[in-house]
Length: 294
Image (cartoon, rainbow, N blue to C red; front, side, top):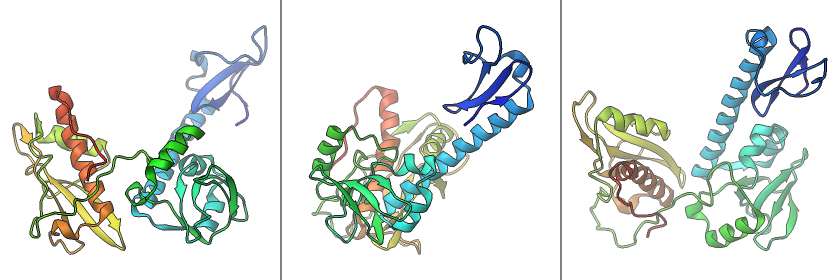
């Protein structure tokens, strides 16, 4: 973004998301100032740039949220859409280096570039650069990636740093020997917090919703939606509260037997329950068990 005159002897611009000034005359002409001069703090151009910076932050967050939704849901994304949004730096930052998969086995790898005609430049699992043009791609949830450890090793070699957590996202794999009628997971129960308000505040900071006395997350898994829920107590409850069991419901509100919970819904529900319980564990100075569980 270019520099704009603001007041006598100064001009301002957004530099790395912050309103910055530089002198236009004298010995320091052209040099960026460490702090914004007091005389410029209420200048209209400075206020305009502040508002622009706030909008750019919101836009960046919205892009990350949308791409995260595509990834968690493993939704097919048209390559024409990727080509349309790619020139936007916020969209690029959210999409770059995510693992993409298509019907063509050769059109899978880390996304590096998108042309205006919809061609995708990727780095394949073999470490080679390829240019492909499938009609749609998915950004798979990591629990669905069969060669996840290979992808992590290649990412380390390439210096990949994903803005949207994908290959290094904590995952849990559903055990194969679950009891036939079981509907709850109790491994993360008993996490104590000073109040329900504190626990609800933690959940909100992690972008989870509060509904009907539970912390919840909705996940589209295999064409259907499931809602994972951890009980935290009735609203306006006084005193300390503890996390309850984890369960899942379908779109009609029916409690799902654990055997019917899909792999992504299982992993994301366990991730939510673990995050809540880990905050309690950190407060007490104890260690919490890790992820990538069977």
